[in-house]
Length: 341
Image 1 (cartoon, rainbow, N blue to C red):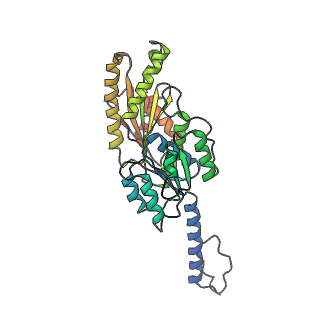
Image 2 (image 1 turned 60 degrees about the horizontal axis):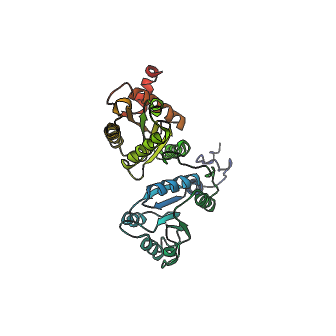
Image 3 (image 1 turned 120 degrees about the vertical axis):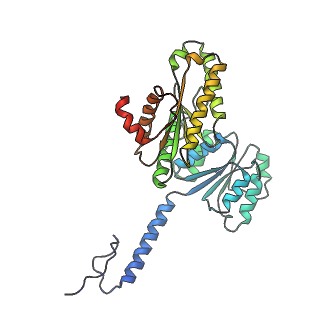
C-alpha cells in the first residue's frame, strides 16, 4: 500500500500532492503563513502623534483609532527623535512647537533619513506663515485651533472611517470629554488588551454624591461654575495622556492606558480622594458633598465595554460602603456582585 502524501495541515494545501516533497510543502505553507501575517499587520497601520497639547493629542488618537490605526503619543521633541530611531510609522502627526527639539528639526531629520523620508508627515501649527517657511515641505498642514471639521477631513484622507466624527466630543458645561467619546476610547483600549495579552488599562471613577441635592442648593450659573472649577482641578491632577470625561451628571471617569502595574492608578485614586476632600473643604461644601474615588483594573478578561461599565457600577456601590478602598479588579468585583445587587 502506498504511503499517503505528506501534509502540513495548511488549509490551502490540495488533497492530492503527488510526488511533491515535504520541504516543498513546508516552504509553500510558510509562504502562505507569512502572507497572512503581513495582511494582519497591514490591517492596523501605525501612527505616531508628536504633540504636546494633551487635548489635541487625545482627539488625534481618537480620530486615528476610528480610521483603523494603532497610535502612540509622544509629547517631547527629544523623546520623539529617540522613538523615530526605532520605529517606522505609517504616518506622523507633528506639532511644530515642542519642548526639547522643535518639530521643524524633526521634519528635516526625517526627510534626510533614507528610512523615514517617505513617511507621510502632517504638520500641526497655529502659525501658517511658519508652515510656509519650513525648509522642507510636509505632506499636509493642519492649523490650530483644530476643529471637528478638520478632523473629519483628516479621517477621510487617511482611511474611510467606520464612525462619524460630526458629534461633538465635549461636555457642554465642563468642556471635558463626554460619554460618547469616552466610550469609544474604552472600546479601543479594550481591543488593545486583546491584541497585547499583557496590556492593561485602568478606569478611575470620581463619584460626586449627592449630585442632585447639591444642584438644588445654588443657582444654575453658580453650580456650573463649580463644575467647571472641579473639572480644571481634576484635569490638572492627571497625566497629559490620560483621558478624562464627565460621564454622567456627577460621575467623572478617567482612562489610564498601558499601566505597568496596579500601584500607579491606585495611588492616583487615593491622591484624588485627598485632593477632592481639600477642594470641597475650601468651598465650604465638605459636609454635604462626599466624593468617592476608586480604580477598576481592566484587561483581556472583559468581553465588552458594557462589562467594564457594569463593574464600575459595582465598584461605585462598594466605594460608598467601604472606606479607604481605592482598587478593584475583575475577580473582586465578580465575587462581590451578589452582595451589591
